[in-house]
Image (cartoon, rainbow, N blue to C red; front, top):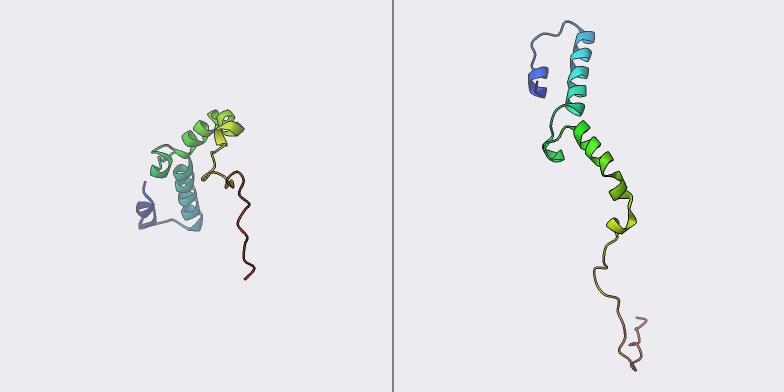
Length: 86
């Protein structure tokens, strides 16, 4: 059931019935419904996939990146240029 379908339901039998229906929808949405932001996986399937990849994610060498730019080196025999204090 989509959110708008639930909220457009013409009759809740009371506040407890509304809380129960909305609570059931939230649980379904957060555990069973596929989400496009998760690659069309359910949140539970996505969490299981992350858990199975945990060792690779924890390995430092997979997270290590090369520097964006090489470090600045002066040419051999040339002193570095002075910096103005202004």
